[in-house]
Length: 326
Ligand code: ADP
Ligand code: MG
Image (cartoon, rainbow, N blue to C red; front, side, top):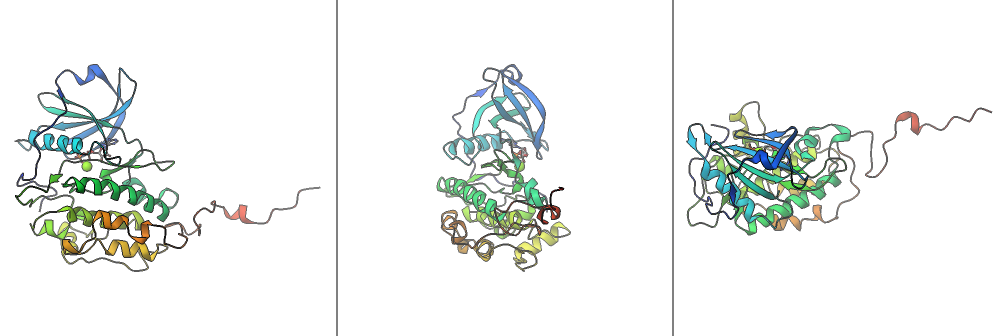
């Protein structure tokens, strides 16, 4: 099975309000620094608007992909960004440019980068459970807003959840609406595949897609943020798909060492095979894990530290002070 395919285009939005500029992007913006990131069909670069000196992220999208005209997909991405304009946790769209080969989205720059980096990091760099609780609330508030507008993201994963700053840890910005769909149409949305590790069982079975499809991905996302481990990832793609369709998840103490049982309970309410049984974003926001009902939270994956706000001490610092020489 391919990584990511779109076999039908139901649920796409084709009306946009943003004026598409056809003058030269480079006459209004300077590209600065290195690339911010890249995906399969896009490169994202930091830029500065000459007239204001403000920093943005320019997403360069190729219109032709594998010999196919994909302009409608890009227009859909723009339309979804427009519909989420008032959503504080969705990246905002500043301007759009079009050339013969590309469309350029000038987006708010999320300078803290992908939460992916802190999901795979060890010790000091990794999120604490307290961090994850705050970020999860923001992700769920953002996704609840999308779902209220009948928009499903369909590609929620750590590479598409960015931070306004990394140290100190800032706020969430949801990006990459390239696979997003509107689910209020009469026509059912099926057969869209996101990223294998994060994809819900109904997507693999070509069953209808709904807002619950995103909720599965959020379950996987929170699992990864808390444990640093990807719950369904197998040696090969087929094994990953089998793990997903069998909902083969490890909730053992081994994996969740130092994580509260409320967090585990929260994840269990999302990683359910039947989409109708999964918690909605609004229900998740009411879960006790996100509402301060847990006991003091230990630091994750850091055996040196045992309680939340304790400063890190090295062994020498914790030894009694030697008497001052007289
Ligand atoms: P793709 O559809 O190709 O995956 P994305 O929109 O996910 O494109 O962008 C690719 C990467 O570029 C992201 O994973 C992220 O690292 C970076 N990126 C995207 N948008 C922004 C932004 N607004 N600010 C900072 N970095 C960004
Ligand atoms: Mg992406």
